[in-house]
Amino acid sequence: MDTPADTPVTELSSTLDRLRAAWQARRPDLAQRQADLQRLRDALKRRLDEMARTIAADFGHRSLHESRIADGMTVLNEIDHLLKHLRRWMQPRRVGVGWRFWPASAEIRPEPVGVVGVIAPWNYPVNLALIPLATAIAAGNHVYLKPSEHTPRTTAFLRELLAEVFPPDRVAVASGGPEIASAFAGLPFDHLVFTGSTAVGRKVMAAAAPRLTPLTLELGGKSPAIVCDDYPLDQAAARLATGKWFNGGQTCIAPDYVLIAAHRRDALVEALRRQVKARYGDLQNPGDYTRIINDGQFARLRGYLDDAQARGLTVIPLAGAEDARERLFPPTLVLDPGDDTKVMQDEIFGPILPIRSVGSLDEAIAYVNAHDRPLALYPFSNDRNRIEKILKNTLAGGVTVNDTVLHFGINDLPFGGIGPSGMGAYHGKAGFDAFSKALPILWQSRRAGSDMLKPPYAKVARFIDFIVR
Image (cartoon, rainbow, N blue to C red; front, side, top):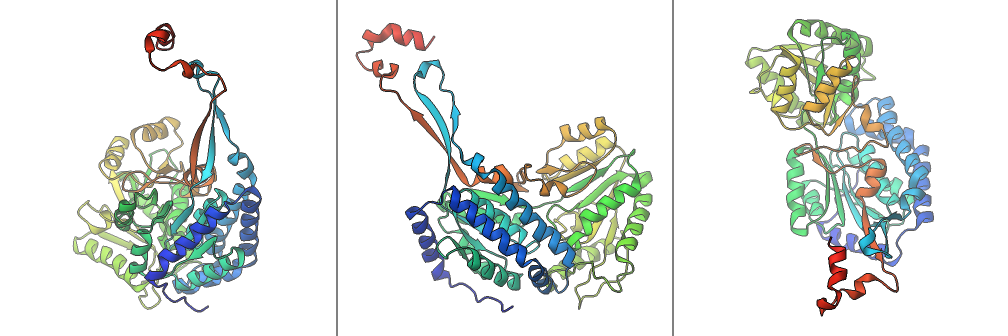
């Protein structure tokens, strides 16, 4: 598939104007929203195999099964949920007015905001483009999408897919690098969704600030796993391995590091080694193991290990060897790195997993709380009291207990971070609400007590005393 040419910066504003004018001329009703979502679902379903091959071409190699799960199933599942609940979500909701304002009545109507901008990342280039897009469509908006320049073939795929489904005045796609992304973020959207790193999220927020553009920022950070003393290590290793090495570790909610009692650390290392061996063998023919997206990301990951080794830390490749030409980076552990190491300062976003020893659960909780609030938190324990202790003494964007990453796929759980890990949330009803304006409406009756509230107030002093009692 040919890669798309960069969108001229001068075209961005005119495209947004076209989308907004069409929206103002005819705001999508329930029937149109349902039809749009169904066509999008049908078109993506037909092209799932093409989608998986296209993403693999951008990565150099990516498991076709992982693409079908993470970029196919998740989007289809979300659209199904939107279609199932959309009619109910769109209904006005009656609210009480209180006796002082009787006999007026009031309601809240979810109204579309206009044109929603979506800046999508490269790691799940279809999922993180189409889920916010579909949700914005469900809320009655038009959408302007900016996919990542690091997955140009997938951008071309998305452009073709969306052109098949939507007219150009309802959904548009911009392509290009940082210059285009910066200009895109500065457009006067009615809402802007960005998924990416915390560092770039700050730039997006700064670009949107002069317009006071409402934002949903899905960022990242270091998502910890806490393995308590009672939890079976083989099961913990299996579930950590799934969350960490799916997509080659290039997942914003992948476990970024593990906290575990010192006397259990080495046993967890061996359990993780067995998991990698069972899943990927010796990485000689790693068909199910995804490569690193580009040379720059590979060099960044290599730099983390160089720094750790220079500090004398134990670095354990769990299978095979690195292959820079193929961008094959094996699952690797780093034992007990300090906070001064690079691997503990940045979101790893790759297949490196630090394991830090702690003396107690209290120490683990204190360590998490001493750092930025994470996008995800993964406590492992079969003791409900221990889990509750962790939940009540920490705060994260989302939590999966005794597993990893799966909370992302639950439609009725809002997905979003807190502080440096994000702002706002979407998925399901949370996304519909985020991309809507909850319009409050008061309906006044023909005769109302408020007609009496006018000077001279001495005439209605008793009425005023009555309502302010």
